[in-house]
Image (tube, rainbow over all chains, first blue to last red; front, side, top):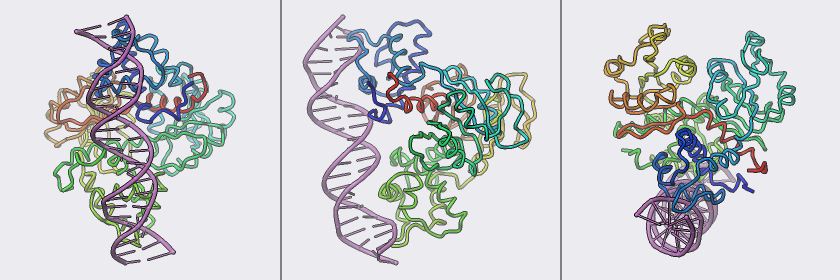
Amino acid sequence: MVRPEGIPAPVVRRLSLYLRHLESVRAEDRPTVSSRELSRALGITDTQVRKDLAHFGQFGQRGIGYRVAGLVTRMRQILGTDRLWNVILIGAGNLGSALMRYRGFKRKNFRIVAVLDNDTARIGTAVPGLALDTIQPITALREIVRQYDVKMAISAVPAEAAQSIVDQLAEAGIRGILNFAPVILQPVPGVRIETVDLAVLLEQLTFQLNIGTGA
Amino acid sequence: MVRPEGIPAPVVRRLSLYLRHLESVRAEDRPTVSSRELSRALGITDTQVRKDLAHFGQFGQRGIGYRVAGLVTRMRQILGTDRLWNVILIGAGNLGSALMRYRGFKRKNFRIVAVLDNDTARIGTAVPGLALDTIQPITALREIVRQYDVKMAISAVPAEAAQSIVDQLAEAGIRGILNFAPVILQPVPGVRIETVDLAVLLEQLTFQLNIGTGA
DNA sequence: AGGTGTGAAGGATTTCACAGCC
DNA sequence: GGCTGTGAAATCCTTCACACCT
C-alpha cells in the first residue's frame, strides 16, 4: 500500500510528467522505455527516474527497461486517475468560462459536472455538455456535491471571494481545490489546496530575465 | 548586484508570495510587518522568511520588523516588475481568449500588446484594448517583437504546435515563455520556459486524495 | 552490452539556537 | 519584550557507484 504522505513532494510533481511521456510512448506502440529516455524527456537524470519509480515498487526489467503498458496502468492507479472524478467549477467569469470548455480535463478522466456562481445575471445561463447544463447558484453547492459525489473543485472566483468559497467548499465535503485566485488561502483541515497564480508565473519569468538590470 | 542564478529556486518561488502579502499589508497602511506575520500568511516558518529575505540584503529592523514600503519597492526591483513588460499571447482559442482578458496581468505591470494565431478564421478578429487590436498572423511575430520590444510570451496553443511555437519565439528574440500546452518542451538556450498543465494540477490533487484507495 | 535497483555520499534547503539590536 | 540576522545542525533530495539481472 502506497501512502501519499510518504512520497516526497518533488517526486509527486514528476509523477504526472512521467505519465504524460509514457502515454506518448504508448501512442507510438513501443513496448518499453528506459529510465534514460524518460530522464532525457524530462530534463533530469536517469538515476532520479529509477529512484522515483522505486518508491512505488519494482516495475523495471534489468537489461530491458520498463514495460510501458503496465507502468501507465500503475501510475494512473497511483495518481488516482484510473477512475472518473466529478469536478465542480466555481465562478463563471472570464477564466471560469474558459475552464469549463477546456478539453484537457476530460482526457485525464476529470468531468466537470456543474458550474456554480453567485451572480444572478449568470445563474441559469446554458452550459452545454455538462451534467447540469445551466449555471447553478452557490446555494446549490451542498446538494450538487452530494448528488454527484464530488470531491474536487476548481475555483475561479475573484480574490475577495476566494477564502469564503474555500470554507464553503470544505464545509460541503470537497477534499481538493484548484484555486486560481491570486491570494494565499488559509488551510482547512482535510482539504488540499493547489493555487495557480497566473501573474506570479509571469513574474517568476521576469526574475529570471532580470539579470544585471539593477536588481 | 543580485544575480538570479545565485538564488535557490524555492526562494524565488516564495518571493512572489511575499510580495503579494506585502501589497495587501500596504493596502491597510500598516508601516511594518514581522517575519512572523509573513510566515503565518504563507504557511512557512519565520526563520525561513528571514533567511529568504537575507539573500537580498538587510531590510529589517530588529525589534520592529520590515518596513513594508521599502520592502515592496525592493522586491519589485528584484523580481523585475518595477517596470512595464510587454507580452504577446500566442493562440486565441479557448484558453487564449480568457487570458487576453485576464485582469491580473495588468495589475502586475504586464501588458499584452498583441495576440497571434495561425488560424485564418481568427486572424483579424477584434481584440479591444490591446496595442494591436486585431488578432495577428504568426508571420508577424518577428516584427511585433521588434516593434514593442517584447521579451515574454504566453503560449496557449495546442500540444502539437507547442514545440514549434517555442522554437519560433526563441528565434524571434523572446526570452521567457509561459506555456499552457500539456507537453514537455525541449529547452532552448537563453530562453526560460514555465509550463502550466491544468490537468496535471488536478491530477496532483487526486493523488493526495487517493490515500488507501488501492494505489 | 544494456539496463534496473539501491546503499552511501554529496549537496541543497530548512530548522534550531542564539547573539545582537530597538 | 519584541524582533532580525546568522552560524551550526538537521533534514531532505539528488547523484554516484556498483551489484545484479537479461
